[in-house]
Image (cartoon, rainbow, N blue to C red):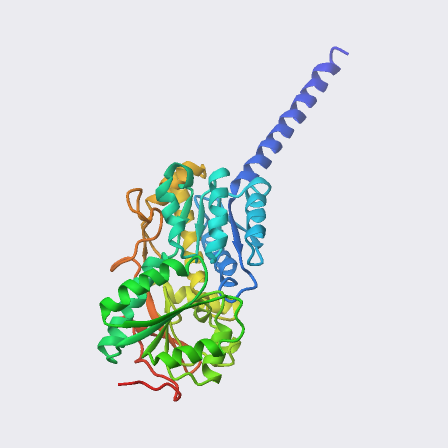
Amino acid sequence: MKNILPGALRIFLGAAAFGALMTGSGAALAADSIKIGVIAEAQAIAGASIPQAAQLAADEINAKGGVDGRKIEIISYDNHSSSADSVRAFQRAVNEDKVNAVIASYISEVVLALEPWASRLKTPFVTPGAASNEISKSVHADYEKNKYTFHGYLTSAALALSVCDAAKDLLVEKMHMKTAVIMSEDAAWTKPLDVGYEECLPKIGLKVLDHIRFSPDTTDFTPIFNKIEGAKPDVIITGISHVGVQPTVQWKNQQVPIPMFGIASQATNETFGKDTNQAAEGVLYQGVSGPGVAVTPKSVPFAEGFRKKYGNYPSYAGYTAYDEVYYIADAVKRAGSTDADKLVDALEKTDWEGTIGRVQFYGKDDPFTHSIKYGKGLITGLMLQWQDGKQIAVWPKDVAKVDIKFPSFIKLSN
């Protein structure tokens, strides 16, 4: 017994040590990946690109060795365009799937519903496509509580400026337009957008003749277009995202003789041409990047890589989601940690050239805390037009491919 026990003890201790080693190794492996939850409108025209683009970015990062050897793991959730489903997905992502950060939604109402949960669950959260000013204003109003939320897309205020900057060059100076009607869907993001439009359009020389806000559930736009035609504006300035196919198809079918120019989120996705049976021809829309547009050296390779993998060019939120995975990974590397507060601190210092321009965030003292900065040398946006079934950049002039071209039913006053 004296000779057997030490041997048995050695075997036991060896097995225990091996088990501990394996357990420790398993824990290390479990902690090895950097998990990013992606909550998106996977069935929506503008939202489908979000999880796809995030996965493409992760695949590229992982192919190059990850972040200091740690792989990026994308865990996707379809929120069915529902705030309630989004909140449940966020809770599951953090509590069960143990994600380190969340990228979520192009719908402002959804993002505003998730913002308090990012605070409660202390999880860095970036939106790739929601625009409401209230997202970043909430961070400014209560920084310690809401510092986990980052606005990875332009605010409604910045979008209005981008549209007006483009309209000044393209419509007022080139085409001598003088009047406009604002046509926006009734949503959280368009309230500040329309305030911005009403302020900046007169400043660039476009008098606002009427301002129409319609329910996103509207199916017949004929009365709206009839009312607009009665006002005889030179241009319709749009603020549409949740809708897009229906008003565009009816604009063409009704032969509305007035061009549409502004925000049209669904028009940013290459599928929009087919979705509208090519009624999109002539539609002008604001974007942050687009097919064949070298906003930065990363823009075209991403768009082409996305198309090769998924069969179509991405929506605007695809470009931003792709960039977000990259600069979250960069923040993890700089922080040397996935600790939430350290990650927030690192994200605040983001200075990343992505597909849409140079990404930096406004600081604590700015009213739009944690929103991406708008301006020359940062993010300025583009104006693109559907021409011959393709999305073509027409502004700013340094990336413009062609001049504006309208369908025959458009009647320009000058």
